[in-house]
Amino acid sequence: MEISLIGWIHTVLGTLAILVALFIIVTKGYIKSTNNLGKFYIIATLITASTALMLYKNGGFNLAHVLAILTLVAIFLGISSEKYNIFGFSKYVQAMSYTGSILFHLIPGIAEVNKRLPINNPMGLSVLDPINIRYYLIFTVIIGLTIMIQWYFINEKRIMK
Image (cartoon, rainbow, N blue to C red):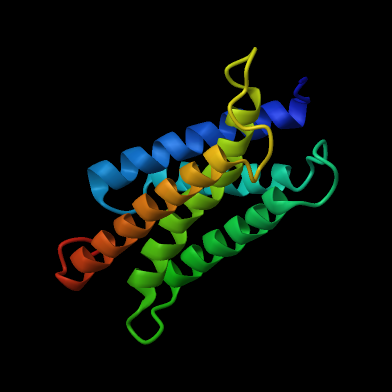
């Protein structure tokens, strides 16, 4: 299956965004737009989600497009919560939005990787293939636990001071 130029930009930038986000969370505990890596993640994610809306090789508007829209909403919600402190919950919303956006990256990424690899015998041929669903559930739990840990540390004032 051939990948277009927009597809390559989308894939490379999306992969870099996920790796950078994981690095930020492991080393800093949360993503914020006020440092260079956080800015890179946010910009790369905005570009990745926007380019996803231009990719229609899989039969028109689908789950990947919905996730791209959710990613854009999550990023804009994260940016807004960094700028405005509403009822003291902004740091919690920021952590949930930015970290949750990683999951929105991962779900279509998992489906695409499993549709292509291994080259001669791909694991998951459809978005709803059972192996893909298992991966979605695993990563949903991991991201959910990560958000709960971030919330705990925010509450304990150990991060986002």
